[in-house]
Amino acid sequence: MSSDIQQVILWLIYLFSSITFILGLKRLSHPETARRGNLMAAVGMTVSILGTIFLYRDDAGDRLHNHIWIFGGIIIGSIVGTLTARRVKMTAMPQMVSLFNGMGGACAAIISIVEYQRFDFYGWNTIAVTLAALLIGAVSFAGSMVAFGKLNGNVSDKIFPGQSIINMIVLLIAIGLGAYLVMHPEQNMGILAIMIATCLLYGILFVLPIGGADMPVVISLLNSFTGIAAAFGGFIYNNQVMLTGGILVGSAGTILTILMCRAMNRSLLNVIIGNFGGGAVSAGNGNNKGNIKEISIADAAVLLSYSKKIMVIPGYGLAVAQAQHIVHELEMLLEEKGVEVKYAIHPVAGRMPGHMNVLLAEADVSYDRLLEMEDANSEFSTTDAVIVIGANDVVNPAAKNDKASPLYGMPILEVENAQNVIVMKRSMNAGYAGIDNELFYEPKTRMLFGDAKASLQKLVSEVKAN
Image 1 (cartoon, one colour):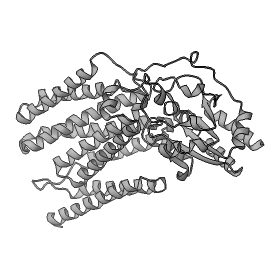
Image 2 (spheres, rainbow, N blue to C red):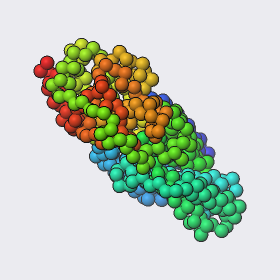
Image 3 (cartoon, helix red, strand yellow):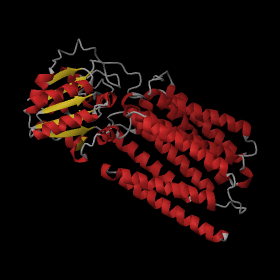
Image 4 (cartoon, rainbow, N blue to C red):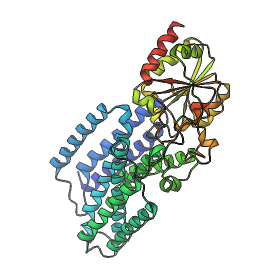
């Protein structure tokens, strides 16, 4: 087979793979088609990888020849990735996403380092793109590793005076070094090493102060960074499928980031500079807010059994307790009694975008029962009872009432408008953002303390008995 025919076949393979990426991404928009969409994109990626390995030729007409190293890396990476994905708990899913995203950023950075050393083969524009991919990839890698540590509880929020200014100076230094290397590519290794270190430092400083409810936004933003870096890699190699995949990941991550910022009524710049939730302290300790009222399992079961409409608010505590299957069982029991049960999902609930959707989908909760924030808020006034399971900041009325609160201005699930509110928590401790919750002291609110899974199991038994 001639090289021209091979290149045509490879181009058709890339076209096919690009189409599968687009269709797969479209199918990810609904849980019923998400699995097929994911498999469709995976098939496209597999075909494009095999096509590149066996059909690609460089400008000199040479094929890839180091197949042992290539397939060795693929096999090892596939084994490690599969075992990690199968063993990860749902509560650790955000950490895994951060880790895998960081590996993508590191890959883009390493590719850029290797290709920059071949500067004599490229023009200044390709060198500029290569260094841009290095900067973004290194920032994404370092930032994702810090995000992993923060989500895993190994790294705490760090805020110091003048941090935003220092971050900007470090970023400008990295950009300045990159600009110098574009103009003087022959002086590469020493200055390139300094640029790499500066980019890694910026990635660390960029994420280190951000915490609390902003972590889903940061994860989404870092994901878009990795996509952009991959797209630059596609430009370097003139690889259409790499370019398409990177653009899709980068644009999807950017759109998701913007949507979440809108859901929080804040700009992306405010999220990055404002450090919402980073180092926040509780606005109260429970002694100066009023009295709390507890409810027993038996009373909660009676209230739910004789309600007409119930709304469930899932939060990170539900994931920690691995209680999604129990809450689905409770939902089905109540439905048998003629109770309408729905779920209200806040855009930034959990530790990553879509965390609660994935959690409930794992328990086979019907997607039609999941309401977005705006739809849920319009129904709370006609809801007899709300069950808040492990959620905190996304239901805190301080976001509307307390101008001094870091939460102020963030749209929330307005559960206080329901007739009754049951809050399931282990204790009165503040949520992830470190802000005391005014909802706990509302006259309509009853606290049900204990592990969410154990409490729900007891509640299911009581509902069955009624």
